[in-house]
Image (cartoon, rainbow, N blue to C red):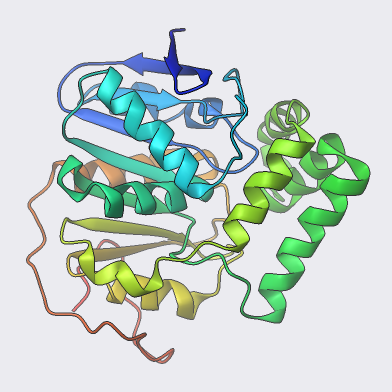
Length: 286
């Protein structure tokens, strides 16, 4: 698999297919291997590029402090190196945060955006949020990546039928650097683009899971604040949506990436009420 010198580290990535460029950005503690079900499916329609983010997978870490803004700059450098001036972008979890940041920093470079299992602010604002951050900080800080991977795999894939997927996730998680993981987590805890969602004038799909870490109301508010936003709920799914329900996820994402453009609508810069009605699967927010 190819590597590129980006800034002060060697970035490892996978490329497959041909056609319009499509970038896939993985989540915290993950790698491009998490896209094993998406790369071959999407490569039938696009030139797919999936990097290992700085400090994860087979990429180096360099000497710079990791964080959402740094990761966005790294991906922008990868796009420049590969002569990609415009692309479609899919981000999962932390990759969703990076995708939002990259798109806001360089809106003319992103044609369509898919945010899976992610939200526009990771700043803890509720007891549930604080518990999620605290558990990761304590387990990774005190017990290390192997134990965190075991707990995370069980939470993401609780179905006994998903034993193989749990084993894969645990094996990948064991390779994580404690320092890189904690640095990225700390950066996420300070990151928010809630007040800038109205700037995203391109079509955006929010792919959400029924049993995710994020609450239903905050996900609905996110989608409703997007000028060309769509929301698709995946029933029964957890945080590892692209791995847990790959066939359904791939179909919804491909329909969005290749289908007609959603019409632009007016949005308010303020948060919408929690009682806002849900949107049906794949339906445009109104």
